[in-house]
Length: 82
Image (tube, rainbow, N blue to C red; front, side, top):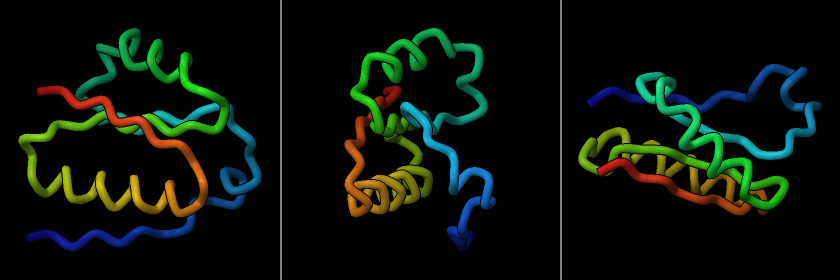
């Protein structure tokens, strides 16, 4: 199994104040209207995680990302594609 390392984002992103964040696989860019609508309806400062539950390694990574954001006090919404 591949090992992933989470690193600090670039300084410009650390200083940015964003309304919401959507973390979406690149394969879902053609479906942007769907997940962007969901992200835009969330309260300010929320995080939208879009993932595929049947992909076990990816699901483990997204669960860790969810935990990290929740520890920082963000509301996390998960949109799963079955």
